[in-house]
Length: 174
Image (tube, rainbow, N blue to C red):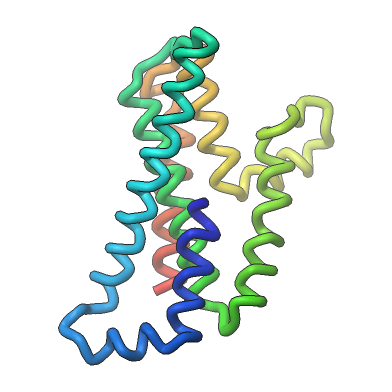
């Protein structure tokens, strides 16, 4: 949702001439991008809150750690993904290319970030490749908080990488 919600939309706006029309308004480019980030964050937070609440109610799921730390990791992770989507949107000229590039990024990220299966028995180079994706750090941090009750000191590495990746993606994208 974070990748395609922003990346694909901005490319479509550029292709349809919406961004050109906005350039003659008093709206500044950073204000437009900020509004895209905030609106996508709102949608992601609401949707995830529903899923989390549903799991807590239906399956009696308990979070062992701090909800504040969990929210911090989630918000930084979502922001990093949105930033990656903006990077793709800023560097793509067509919807087809953006869609292909987003899919090219999404599938390896899903497989290597331990969303579906563990990388415990994999070779060391596969584990190193997985570390380049923000989803890896988000899931690792969230699992530490939810399952192990980790505090901020235990997740500081994941928080740092999510923050750094967001900054790099936004800088290159701008």
